[in-house]
Image (cartoon, rainbow, N blue to C red; front, side):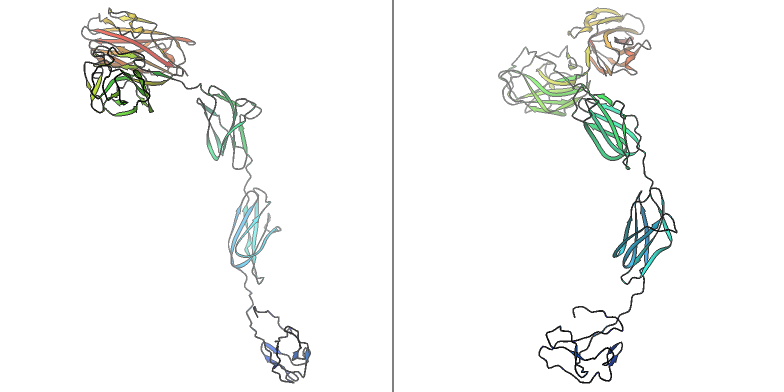
Length: 595
């Protein structure tokens, strides 16, 4: 047989075989008076359950029902006995993992068996039952439709294939379902920080929750959304691609892990709002503008790097290089920006040049420079024939606010060059101006630069020039002679009118010329304390001084007269020394930004 056949005790069965060609064995009258007992098997005597020794003619598989002379045809059975399983499974590691309305009960058994959990809210009444008839050793049963925040009792039961059953524990175990969170998160005050084309919306919640902002240009149509599903208590999300100078309305929403939701400002209250900033604009500056050299072609044919030292009053970016080109100044030209010590900061090769006149090329990336710091801008003339006016920087620099080409002596000599294939120009000849220039970019939003409306001599005697000399950069200067004895002091101030009372920034610049030795101080008048507040001071000689980006401390409104509209700003320059001296100066300016 392909597989054993289980039989029951004290039950009659028939075993047979088919002899397709006859010739079978037989002993007649074998079962007439006795049977064969080979325990636990019994070959029956005829009469115990009908006649024994049976046969039937026909094909294989025909049940033998005929008998003749109680014959034994010597057909036998192979019988195997086995022990009966009476041991129940062993249950261990019973655990409960409750949720708010569900619980998962797990345990293990040492043999494959079924799974059942009896449970209820009373230890004496475990009426609901959850079952699984699959025979396994790792058991997991889910209980559903439970009540939140409720204590439950339970037992587990397992039965093996032989129907042996175990339960555990003897006294019911317990678990408590979780309490359902029905409280929405609390949203704290919301902040909006706009830029020109975007805004950052921030808030906090008292529990971890999601982040969402619904916004739009109409309070009744918040049809755009920015969101983040991460559960956090500190929320910040960026809105992008907004229209500059536009008012946006918005509401924020946070949803906790239990799906409780809060929105602020809540409907029907009006949504919050913010306004994007106006489009960012810049001002482009150069030093020479359209000015042309006196000597357009120097005639020198050598390969040479030609440069100029400069400073800026304010921080900004150098975007490119300019130079004035003579018709015979041919070949490839490169422009460079250097630190004052020779570090190459940016360079560019000129293209699409015209036959002559000013040429301009832009760096691949703008380079940011610091105010009041010396830099060198240069270009390389591979075939000479450069422009150059000798003696240009001997007695004067060029101040085109906020840029300044240095006069000789401010930071060494100006008008620099280097013969050869290129490199940092560090040689000078007759303070020559080679008409190398830079392209400088500064933010212009809400930025205004002013010259004083009037200039007043406070102490000292006007020796030369005019007090109007501070009102514009006319390359002339005035002199004030000290008149006091002992420690001699001279001072003058410029009055700037129509300055807004609400400022975001205030900066002062002053250019002094040919000052005799003194300690020079720059101050701003504080209208709240009625006192001059010194911003900077420096011992100066006969060299030109450029002070830039000097910002007073304290509240900026203290330095503007009046409480509304516009007012006055006063800037003073003073020199002190113990000997007779003459102080000379030229230009005074302020610049300011409004919020």
